[in-house]
Length: 212
Image (cartoon, rainbow, N blue to C red; front, side, top):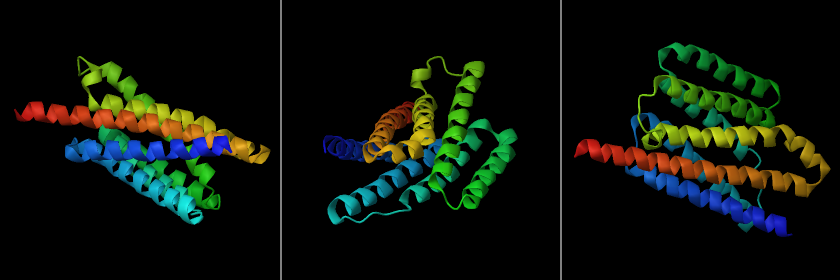
């Protein structure tokens, strides 16, 4: 079917955009961005393994999404701990443990983890921009790598929250609705990876300027 072919194309575009982001970030990345870079690596690796196993061998890997969401939760909580400094560390650690506890209690339902992660990181990325506007340490926000990284996260997680909330309902309607909803998820993933790649490139350029 056409929508399934389009889904496959967008899936591979998302994987290649993750590769581009990873290659740029590996060259030189600010210390705080190492958690994000590690997340991009796992995103690329797990998506590639899933795509190859399913498309070429017909093998479906059931828990790859669960593994990724747990890695996402752990790495991005560490990332935002460093953005918001010491006073927010304890609160974020408590939220992190609560999300994992709810996930385990739900019988490892991946949709609970998708929704909770999306809510948490939509809020944190939005709080970053509130903090950014209050402090305005940089004259041009477009020259700040964290601006681009958090832009990518805000777009991705806010959009993915909407998809996650309706995913189970759509999957019960028909297969096409479920596939199309995940196709939009992959489009959000492409946008996120482009923002991350540009953020890594900005950090790399700034590092070179400081070194000159």
